Image 1 (cartoon, rainbow, N blue to C red):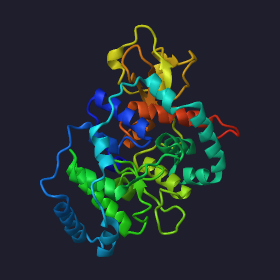
Image 2: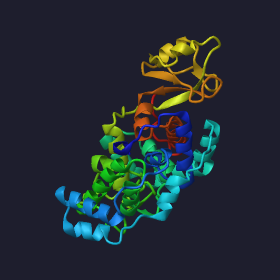
Image 3: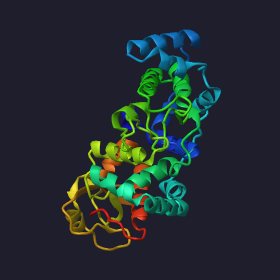
Image 4: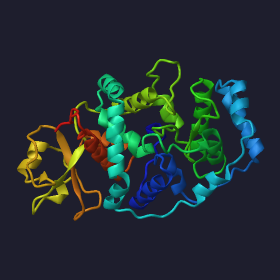
Length: 349
């Protein structure tokens, strides 16, 4: 994830990024490469380019046997180039996005997955200080709980983008990291599948994020984010912890602003109690909790749209994916999962 994160500089790009993720069912992180101008082609023929990549990989200590196995028969993948050239232009509202992502079916599935994996999730949650419902929520938003992980060979997809694309240097770096993952024995080339942009496994880590955050929780010597739930959950929790997750805190909540609210100060961080004194209320009109936790007002679609009071953990989710819509969806789904019976511990405030 964040080791591969690319900043989305405009709202139009962000909308397109969101749309691309919804269409493919994979993470948004790798997809932003296709938001740039039409792809450029390397000056070298592909075979010449691939020979140079082999030399660089060997210089970085990757074994010849790994390179022979991973790069055998690798050619540019036309479907990857098609995705790069033909990403759709969708303009999604938050309301539409939430109806697509936080569906009753996904909520029900998230609750079921939580119950099925309660013991493992509780153990990992305590170890990393991350509430289990957020682990499950990210799993659900990224890949529908492992159902949609992408069927592209990661080495082939990254080779295509490193050879032909607007961010060749970035994808070459990711490709070399993918080769290192193979060299370390975590996965085989045949099983190393992911999105067309190289995001891998049930939590859709780019190779750099895998090397930075993936965890071998079950102790078998491999960090398996493709099939092993213990490693998938622990890797997600480790990512959040190392990104600054604050144990026990919520992500935020939808709120109502009073008449005459000072919009110029909306981004000023205040305690929940201070916002309450300013007349900010829950979305249902109820009073905010008395809390010293600090947050800020977020209006992702500007004045007149839905309004949220978001806390520090919202910023952590944004490090996973720099889209306000994505972070709101993850937080909302986590809250809905946490409503499941038997009751699990809720976040505060």
